[in-house]
Image 1 (tube, rainbow, N blue to C red):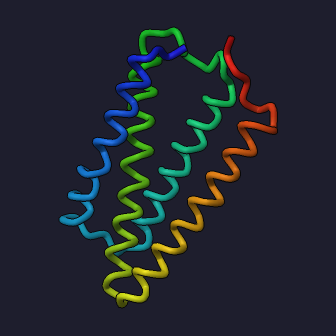
Image 2 (image 1 turned 90 degrees about the horizontal axis):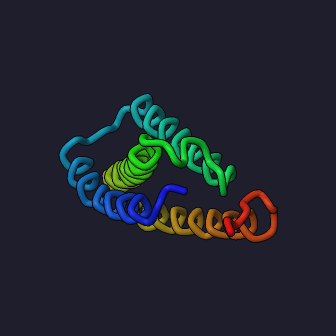
Length: 134
């Protein structure tokens, strides 16, 4: 219901947010646990909102409204930016510990990606939570 243009803009701005966020994370070093925790809560909240919108498919909220597409694009940019900021910040913090910490942090991140992908696959294909629009 959000159109191909919305999908194209979301994907484009989402991927554009990664290098911009990496540059920001390089120059704005965050080491305070409270700030990192706030960004993490923000990121998880955005992810939950996107999952809830997807779960309401094929009729998600505000799908055919004037504000639907910009809200979706902004949600995806916020999700990509906050997630990559957390990833970059964690990498810089681990690098300050030692080289082994970076390696094992990267391994843990990839293992998390595998579990997240498997969970998404099961939810989408076997739960009936997401319905294909015909």
